[in-house]
Length: 243
Image (cartoon, rainbow, N blue to C red):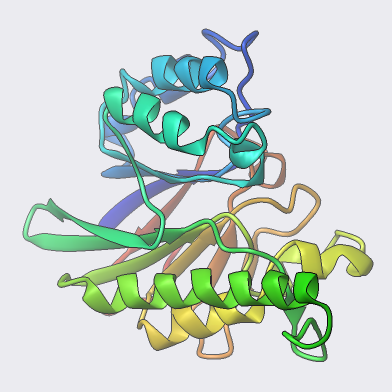
């Protein structure tokens, strides 16, 4: 059994030193890995990334993250990733990595994801170039997630994104903004890539639990949703996740 601590949308700013590190005290007794589902910063600046790095540097377990839309806002995402790496945080974008926990190999594939909507209310790559580019990007990042999942050689696969793969975990948000909170293309990647758990953030007003059409448990771990420093999930080699 793998124990996963997960949170998204911690939104640390330059005024946040000392605000998150205390929440991680003793996390090694509770979890084997910490997964962060994007929006680590407020505005995606290097200065904010340095604060995040300082808060995560003392984590007792491996930390894996994806970036969110806030982390891209300052057009410094490459620098943000480098700063986080200096603190030992591995940031994934269309990539995967494998951790060995005892005799089990955990594979995590990560991508920011993007919007686009869900069945019956989704955008299509037709019409204006800007609309085509919007939907094309959603399809491309979803395809990259699928490829990363497929490439994992492991016992357990987890998909980590910022945007949601299903509408279930958006319940509570205004339906009009669902297309900007996630995309069904991500769910297709999760199902096709044989993930056993999908984690995302972004939807602060959403709900924690959902499921893909293929039956994969989906969890919205945005901090305002889970209401605590991190949520804990257990995943076995053949079992669905248990919270």
